[in-house]
Length: 357
Image (cartoon, rainbow, N blue to C red):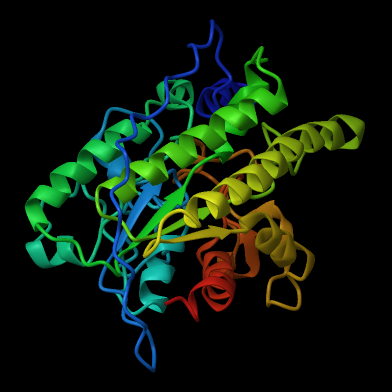
């Protein structure tokens, strides 16, 4: 057990050394004026494509193709995915972006952009540029050997050149922040909670503005969900656990409130552009609190691993796995089970996308 902990801490960003300085803001071209979109027609809205940027919550396998140990392309990951194949998704089956694409009528599963055999049709209906371990802060990405925001934007520009025109009604989904919060406290970052939340918000808003300047008209950004303690929020107890969770969730809430306000202000200045903040914090808390009513038996332990000590390489073929992953909210210490993802996305679609114009 003790030999497992150093590896887990590396995955969580707990390494020695001096943390890199905070990155400069994403360069932001001045957004062009966008014509007002025509009124929506009656009936279900057609979403022609979904383009995902972010971390492991929406990484469908890009980390399989880069130099990193933060991967999930081995059993028992993927045991409930079609074909029982470990694709690089950090759960037992399909993940959030797959369920969202299906619910919006785009396609059943969203492929990773770096997958080599994608057809033009695969590309046109959307891909994920996300990378497990990524964050708003480039120092987070460096620790985790993950693709940064800028690297994901570069891939998007390559994608744009391949497919040509991207439909106005394509949905751009941004999911970052959890890894930043964990590493901010792990490293004892000299920035205050207030300062670091401002850094995260500035990076988020700059990215939105950059995507708008490149033609995006529908952008959804998720707030940071509740962030637990490492090595496992399920094995720590007492005052240490409570304080750890309080510190991290204070930063998560601060970021969520600030970025929601900034998005509302920015959206008011961009006619024809829809900016949607998804309160994932509230939705995730609801799932935890009502897990039994939603069909789950366990909202405390992870399905894969020893005492919850498992994520990426520490959830492997030798790890114990619960008999019914679908009855667990957590698959590993970081990520929901595929069944929990489905419930979460159903809530997201009902609240935020059902009536989107």
